[in-house]
Image (cartoon, rainbow, N blue to C red; front, side, top):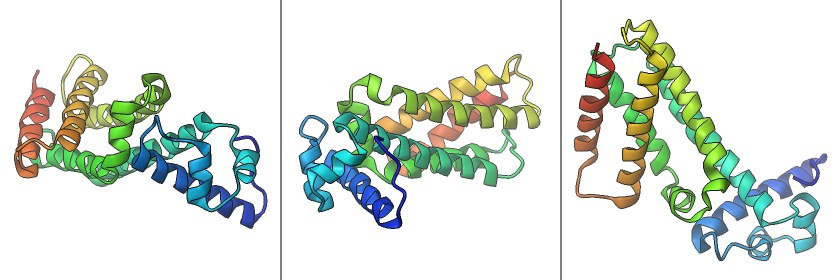
Length: 197
């Protein structure tokens, strides 16, 4: 951002601009996304928008950072709320996979833009930050649960990458696989791998 809003009215305007940017990005796609469209959607002048955001890229960055933080917080809360992790219990893996699916489904339109339209350089840092947070939590839980892998962090990385990529494709592609079936498959995949010696 060009400057940080100090007054409540300015903060409210910036929030409107960011929310409008998210709406325009999902509705119109990345290529058609412009600061003028965002200003129109937010009901502010382009000049007001430019006081805080110098260009399209700055707006997309803020939208991406917030979206990534929302997903990360939802999944982390699910992991933290799961209590003691028992990787032998398929319900634990299922709950984590369900939290990820729910977080991704919450804004499938933005997920599509991120995964299929944004240049990779635009979202890679946010994606890696999310993956790192989930992997670190999972590695701690695997260690606490007595998983005897030589490298719990490596095992956590494989599980997170597999589950994340399948979850994203399931949300975006909407294959003829029920939510119940995909959660069962996640449980079998991640649970069996996590328990492997």
